Image (cartoon, rainbow, N blue to C red; front, side, top):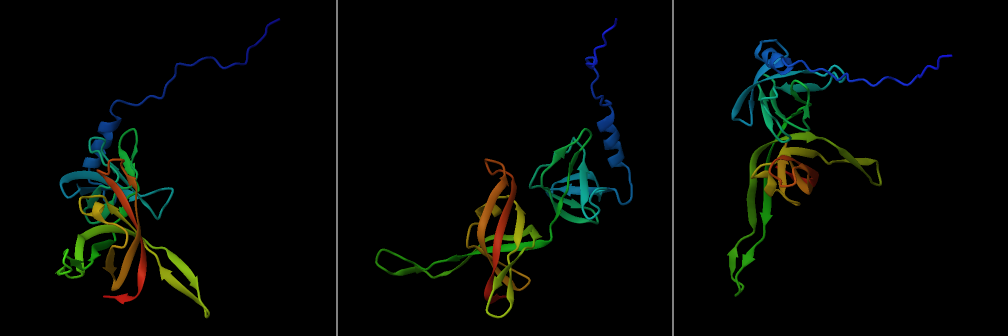
Length: 218
């Protein structure tokens, strides 16, 4: 009588990655494939090649891929020839490239701050109330969101847009109650979120939660 053991036999089989996989993809990036491969500039400094095309699973979104020899990280800005400028969000390292779903930079923000009047120890005014510029012409990705407020008659829609900006020496100075004007409307920042930045806040993305200031426009 034979007793058969149905347990699977141990296997030493491992997923095989061809040694030329990365170089093959790099060669693909260097070829001119209309609608797929592009010249690009990373952070206004480094000229690179990239692949940029629609996501097969999400036709309304696009995938960006670059060589493993071109590290990209969250908060980088990439300018793709003929396609515009994009903000790099979370990056995935694949076997032959880095990949992400970049965010189109569709707004330009100049953020200002109200400054109070100041007096010296004798009560003499040494500085009049005014306004200082915190950052100028910062590229941002706008994520529109509406809130609703019930009133006696009907419903009023209050714009509460959210903006994503790359962290840099200027944008890290933005804080609550700073303001900016966009499309003739003035907005106040009520929360600055640094959760998408590295612990040392050397790079990443900041999120601005804003409210339109009623009755104020440029």
